[in-house]
Image 1 (cartoon, rainbow, N blue to C red):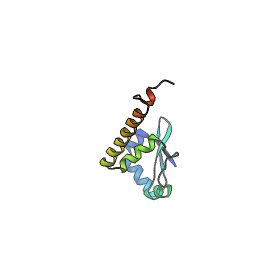
Image 2: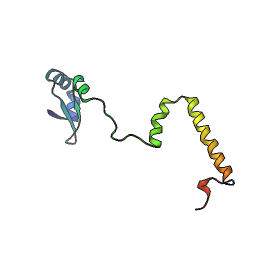
Image 3: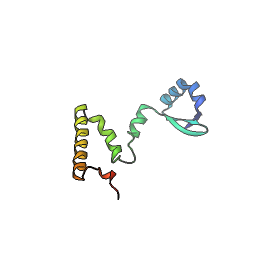
Image 4: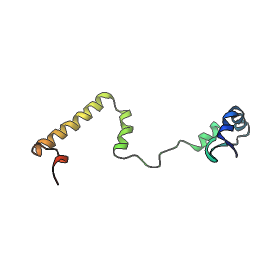
Length: 103
């Protein structure tokens, strides 16, 4: 594998892409002396496969991805349920939210 600095790679990008396609040999791009990226063919990319997160998001981070799959009405209903549950908790605790009560 050949290595090129980012400035040199930018200046010769078309030639580097042609070389990768012709030779099927990846080209690494360095920034400040450290490899940060690799030019590969589409075939090589397909063999590498999609990147998956190392950890499955949980809790609030999992919700961030879930929002994309929910419609506006479902999100509005979800938020309304949260407010209803909070109001019920405040009513049951004598008018103060659990976070407002002293330990």
